[in-house]
Length: 231
Length: 231
DNA sequence: TCAATAGTGTCTGTTAGACATTATGGA
DNA sequence: TCCATAATGTCTAACAGACACTATTGA
Image (cartoon, rainbow over the protein chains, first blue to last red):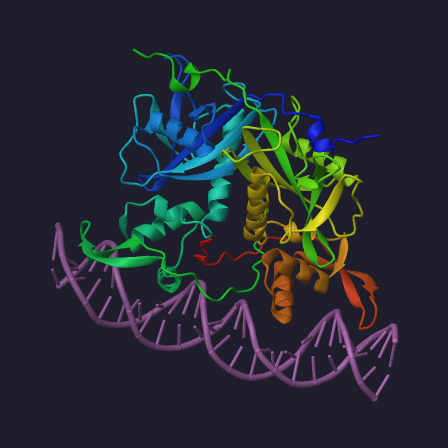
């Protein structure tokens, strides 16, 4: 007869090779870009996501921050978990399990080291198979969470124009948005507040600068949307 | 001078104690319930999430399925990743990293073993600190993804009434929905199709049975919602 | 007949998108 | 002046929620 509970019959003696794979994302020259680090010999250019094994006692976001800092030069402040993968697809470090973490970097951060380069998300070089999956998942997760999480604001400088904000939403969602509707919805959401600064970029009327300042949660919770993703 | 790329200077020699913590969810007697397994001696009742260490070569969902099967008696077919946790909060198996996975079980599945019991999600006994966090994250994730993922349909038998479907959405969202609006939106979504069966439960007009049968993705993608969660 | 639940039609206020218009700068 | 961009007002169609009503069963 079994007296001991199932969950405790197997102490966690088994240990796993774990990797934190980091998808550093930032808007670069009007596309969403990923920071890849150079892999392989100097002869042939090969690329992979920056990654490492978490150190004992280190949090996953801390590990991601450390990895991102190494390739970026500065430390990102916002992270979003992509998910864990343990498929058979090859990982560059032969990790059994990968935890994907997206690091969102504002567009005004000028980072990058000799060993890392930005690539447009939709025009990436060949990657280790597991990393290819992680990047795809990252893109999909970011798209799905963009209206539940302040992702877009983390890809912008602390102050920004509404046109700039809209263009980031369009990058993340992969489709154009209606300007007047976008601004109306933003107004109703109490997520931003105007500053008293204006910025003129080239010709055209200068735009007012705003900052992210979520003030209060919307009272009304509306109906279900049934927006099922069927990728 | 460094010739080798950063990512490869540290092979994944370091190994981690990893746990898959499973949140088995199912509607039981008009609430969302979690299946907990008995822990500790027979003297004092203590409870924890079912969990285990993934075996070499085993996928994470496979591990979750194996763990859930042990406590439930049958194998769940739908899983949703909750996220990975590596905080300092204590895990019953002293795992460094937990991967939380929700297993959704339809309401007509009668499972459960001597060592496991269903508890209402909002009235749980004391749990190991890490597991408390995993359960809370599961509830939050399920609530956030309910309209992007067919979660609700995985908590129902293969055929179900629209009232039943609505009640599951209400359980997941934690608020009441408007009947006519719910049905209109569902109609427009092409997610269900009627069967030619009807079910009368006690008094009242019998309800038509439907099945989950997503037919085509809605053509129009509408504006951004700015539904930021500020828990 | 009454109670209870399913399913639908109509009305109305809200909202999203189209379009037009004004505002304000640089070339 | 012309052009480009910002910002906003108006119109309309679509939609969400309220309400009422019919339909169909068991007690």
